[in-house]
Amino acid sequence: MDEHERMVIAARQVDARIGFYIHFVVFILVCTGLAVVNWLVTPEIRWVQWPFLGWGIGVIGHALCAFGSGPNFMSQWRLRKIRELTHPETRGSETSGGASAAKTIGILLLGALIGCAAGGGYMYTVLADARANALSLEASRDALEKSFKEQEARLTQLSREKSALEGTIKETKDRLGQLESSKQSAEQAFQKAKDELAHAQSAREAAERALAEAKKASQ
Image 1 (cartoon, rainbow, N blue to C red):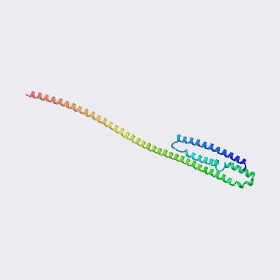
Image 2: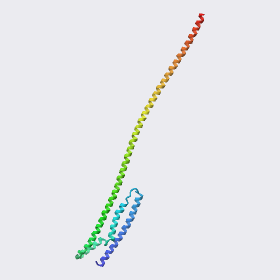
Image 3: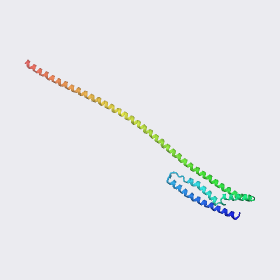
Image 4: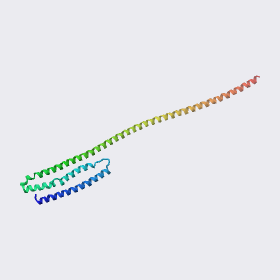
């Protein structure tokens, strides 16, 4: 490897590290914002750890590419291919570089799989929370339906009691009317009996006077 190639590799490695620094700063800022949103908007559900974990794995993979045992594997691959095309006799000596690139690719793939697993865990948590909320809403709906049926049955019972009470009041009014009629009839009979008694008293007095006059006349 000549001086020019070393300069190119070093320059690309510096660019890769600058890209990592930018990526890391963006990662910190965005995750901080997500944490604030989670704390202010949905404090009852903690979900910020899942994007933090998934993206954090990507940041670790980026760091391995930028600060690993060698420079950016893409730059190594490009330089290796250029050397293979310009110097075919050096192709066999690049086997170790290919193994290093394969190792880096494997690490990135592992990070991607772990990130997918983290995203799946986050989706599972969201779905579990949604299912729990649905079950809670369904239980509340059943409780409301039960309460509505109980209130409806109570209203029906009160309506029946009202009808029975109205019937009792009507019967009582009818009986009061009958008692009033009986009272008036009794008063009329009493007045008639009183009149008859007064007439009989008058007849008795007249008979007594007639008897007294008859006695006087006989003497």
